[in-house]
Image (tube, rainbow, N blue to C red):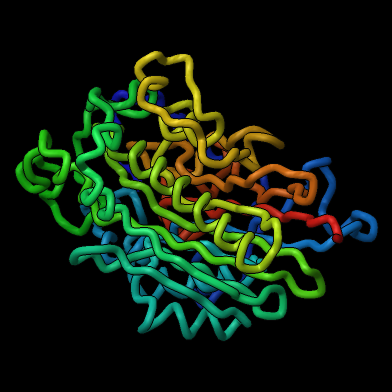
Length: 395
C-alpha cells in the first residue's frame, strides 16, 4: 500500500470506455457489478489454453495485496462506494476472485482475519497455507496458500525485518543518504493505511535520526520450499510486504537487501538438505515503483546513481521480473485518485529449468472497471492481483 504522493505523475482518471468487462459470479448483490476475473495471457500472445501439450511441469502463482480490513476507512477511501468497503461484501468478493483464479500458489499481503476467516475459507478450495503476522500490534501479515495436489511443503522460514535492528552496528545497513527516492516520492500529504489517522507524523514513528527507530517498521515476509508433484524439482516461493513510506527509501532498501540475503541463505540450505537446485520465485508488495532504488537493486544490483552504487552490496541472487521481462511492467497495480502506479511484482531467478509462460492480464488505464479508483465493485482491494504461469523442464 502507498497512499497519496501528490507530486508523482499520475495516470489520468479515464472517461468511461465502451469496452466490455469479464465478470465472475459472486455472492455480492445481484443488483451490483461483480468482481472481475482476469485471465492468463501467453507471453507469446496466445491464450494459455490454446497451446500444445506442455514440454515440462507447469504451475501458476498469483500475488495479491487484498487490503486488510483494519485499514479500510471511508476517510482513506472516500472515492469508493460505501458498500464496497463493508467487511461482508469485501471478504466475499476477495474469496470470489481467489477461487476463480484457481492458481496453484497464492501469495497474499495485508492478510488479516487469517485464523478467523481466510484460512478455513480459502483452504476449502483445496489449498493448505502458512502465515506470518506482522510484528508489534499490527493485525495483518503475509500468507502463502498452495495446493497439495500440486506441491509438497518441505521447509519454511519467516522473515521479520525488525531483526535488522540487531545488526545496527553494521554501518552499511542504512545508507547515509536518508532522502526519499527521487522517482518514487512526493509530499506525503495523507495518512498511510495503518489504521491510525496520525501515524504519518514523525512523533508517532519516533526519532527519524535513530537507525533503530527507522528500521523497526514491523514488516514481514515468509518463504517456503516445495517439491512439485510428479517431478523431482524443487521450488522456493517467497512472499513479502516492504515498508510503504517513500520518504524512508533507505529503510525500504535495507529491507530489500535483507530479504535477498535471507532468500539466498534459504536456497543454499534447501540445496544442501535435499540435494537439489531449487528454482526461486519472489512475490509481493514492494511499495516501490519501476526505476526506484529498491526495484533497481532487485533486478540488477547496480544503478547509474553514484550514491546508490555506494550503498549496494553485490546482489546475493540474480532476479528477473516476470512482467518486466515479458510484456513490460504494467502501468499500475495500485489505483486510487491520489496515487496510481506499480508497486507489486513477481520476480524469479532465471535459469535453464524455469521459464514464464504467461502472465495475468491487468486492466488498461481507460478500463471502466478502474474508473474513479479502487476499491470498487469490480476490484475489492486498492491493489490488483498479478500472476504468472511457469514451466519447469523435466529432469
